[in-house]
Length: 261
Image 1 (spheres, rainbow, N blue to C red):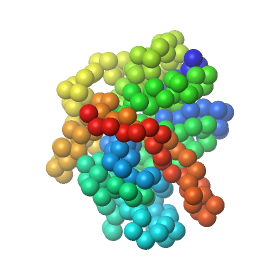
Image 2 (image 1 turned 30 degrees about the horizontal axis):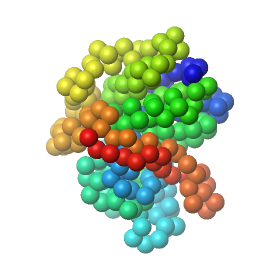
Image 3 (image 1 turned 135 degrees about the vertical axis):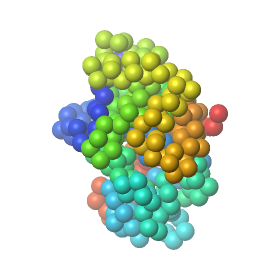
Image 4 (image 1 turned 120 degrees about the vertical axis):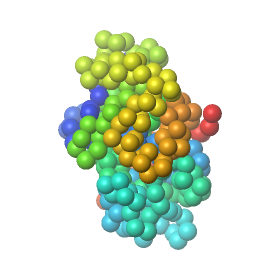
C-alpha cells in the first residue's frame, strides 16, 4: 500500500532532493498544461515534449523531422508568436499523429522540475481516476507527491482542487486517510466541499486563471477540462529519443489508451 500522500502547493516549493528519494510525482496544472497534455494524447498525439521556454521548444523542433511536430505554448498567458495556443479543444484539431512540443509558464516547468522523482505523471480532472488506478497498482510501496504547478509563484485554487480530486480517487482505491499529510488532507476536504462537476465549475470559474479564460471567451475550454474522469489516458514522463542530443529533454507518453466519455 502507498506509504504517504503529500500535496505541494506551488512548483517553487518542489524539493528535488526529496523527490529523488524514490518518490512518485503527479503534476497538476488544471488550467491548462496537464489538461492539454491529457487531451492531446487522447486525440492521437504521438507524444508531448514539455520544455522550459520558447527557445528550448525551437531547439527541439530543429531536431525533429519536418512536418512531424507542432510547436505549442504560452508565456504569461499569451500565445507565443509562431506557436499554437495550448488549449485542449484546439489542440485536438492539430495534434493527431504529431509530436507536440509544449512550452507553458507553469505546467511544463513543474513537470521538468519533478524529473528527479522515480516516476512523473501528468494529471487533471479529465484523467485522475485513471492515474490513481495506475499508481495504486504500480507504486504500492512508494510515497506520492501531488504537485500543484501554481501560477508564477502564486497558489492556484484550481490546481488545489485537482489535487484534492486525485487524493479522493486514491482514497476510493483504499488509501487510508491516515496516510495523508495535512496538505493532502486539506486538498481532499476542499474537493469534498465542492465535489461534482457543477460545483467544480464554480471553483474553476472563480479562480484567477478561470476568470482570465472567461474574459477571453474560453468558457468551452473550461467546460471540457471540467469533465471528471472522461479520459483514461495516463501521461508518464519518459526519456525521449532526443535525450542524447538535447540535455534533459523528455517526452510525455501515454501508457493506456484514451477514451472520451
